Length: 94
Image: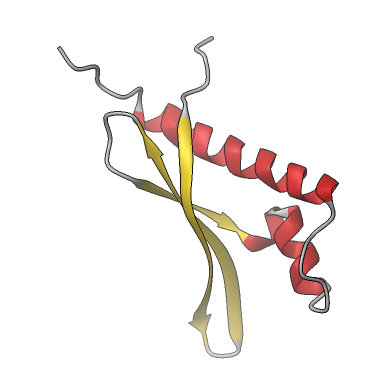
């Protein structure tokens, strides 16, 4: 088993798309950087990110509870790590 790659989340944005009239989907676009690669983006359905779900269902709140923030961080980390694993490790400079 390989060690998890070290990356940094640069930006996150919730995007609403409308594939068909009357239907909308919310997606979290997470831009991250990984050594020796240009920034990459992973797309996660908003319904899979606990802190985003909380804030969407509790619009009067400005912050999600710490446990949901941590769960959301884990979801983001796993999705980014899965994408990195699919694309292979970064190339090393000679």
